[in-house]
Image 1 (cartoon, one colour):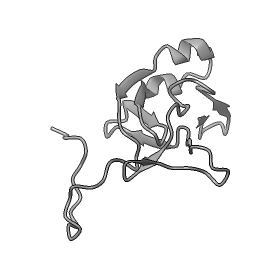
Image 2 (cartoon, rainbow, N blue to C red):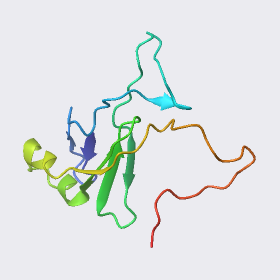
Image 3 (cartoon, rainbow, N blue to C red):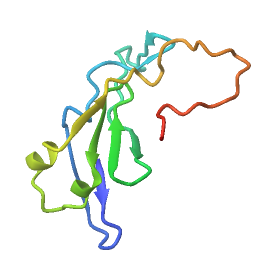
Image 4 (cartoon, one colour):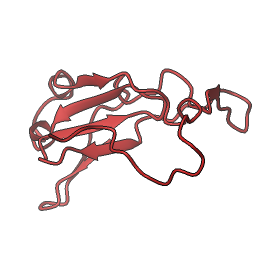
Length: 119
């Protein structure tokens, strides 16, 4: 992942090849593994990124799941060594592949339900 300091324009790579950013199981859709053009199981590394509403947490995961988070204060510390930075990563949830299991929602449903309650 790349962290960009908007004030200075400086960018730095964080968590490069860290287990929390690398897919260790193939992406699935409708309960079946997906394959790339070469016929091999499809792996998409950390590409799902989200900030908490209060700005305290940065959440991310590979498309195949296992969501992690890190406090944003560590993203704002460019002098923090990589190993020290990585120690602040927390596993948040063992989420399924974003393809997920077959839907149990009726095909006519158009409502969206938030995945996390904000109370």
